[in-house]
Structures are given as structure tokens and as C-alpha cells.
Amino acid sequence: SEQNLILDTYNRYDYKSDKHLRNFSLDLYIHDGFSGVLLEQMNFNTQGRWNRAETQRTGFSTPAFYQEKYGQAVKALLDDAGSQIADILHCMPFSARITRTAENQLWINAGKTSGLKRGDKLTVYRKTVLYNPTGSSNTELHNTNLTLTIDKVQPTTASGRIQGSVNQHNIQMDD
Image (cartoon, rainbow, N blue to C red):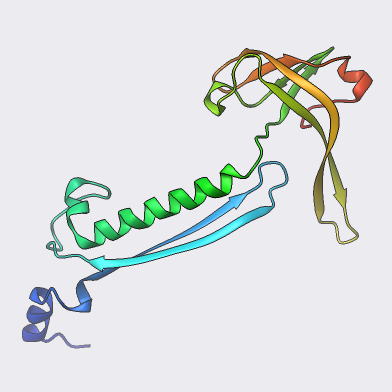
């Protein structure tokens, strides 16, 4: 369409106009780490006025960004999303994959950064993948009634011992 200099100038300086309203949308997907199954899907939307000049660069999540109504609306939305994520994950049990086995010792892919410490006790589950006739898979976890007692903790890994041998209980990697 043709540009109208007077109308374009008016719209640029009319900060109450919807032309200065910015929209923010966030799609969030939470998947199970073992099976890859989608646990939660959420969509967050907000909007707010942006009164800064088009040529002025503020950056995302800067003090200048949060001075605008749009920045305040985005911050409120992100705070709300964070609390909803925390509520969802708070209800989920802790889980980690077994990465290595030897005799009565197991190594897992979680450590100090996951909140583990020496002496923690974890229940060992056996992982079973079932395939239906269409070829899609379902993952099931079965309680082995074994307890892993953590002996050594690194930032992202930990190791510990179980009663008996891993061969005796058929504990394998990825359980």
C-alpha cells in the first residue's frame, strides 16, 4: 500500500495506539527423561506497550527493558511460568540413568548439581521397553526392591553400592 506521510507520522507518535503494543508468546513442553513422553504442554501469552524509539536498542531482560510496560508484563509472565514449572516438577520423583555397572557398584548420570550427597539412598528400577503392533514404544519402570547407597559424588555423576551383585539382579546400563 502507499505510504501516507501524515498518517505514518501520527501513528509513530501516538503511543496510545495498538501499533505500539508488543506481544510475547511462550510455548513450553516438558518431556519425561526416560521415555521421551510429553508430560506437560503449556502456552503463555502477554502483551504490553513499548514506548521507546524503534532505533533505540535496549536488549532483552535489561533494566531499560523492564522500565517499559511490555518488559514488566514479560517479567510477570516468566515468573508465573517458572512457578508453574516448579509446581509440576516438585511432584515428579527424582530419576537418573545407570551409566555403568560392576560387581555390586552402580554409576548414575546425576551428582552434586542434582542435589545428591554421600549416604543418599535411591531405589533401583529396571527399565523395560514394550513395542505395540504399530511399532511405537512404551517405557515401563519396574521396582527391583534394591537400594543404591551413594558412596562417591561428583558434580554430574555419582556411584554407590547395592546388596548383592548386578549380575545376580540383572541390573544393566539405562536401568
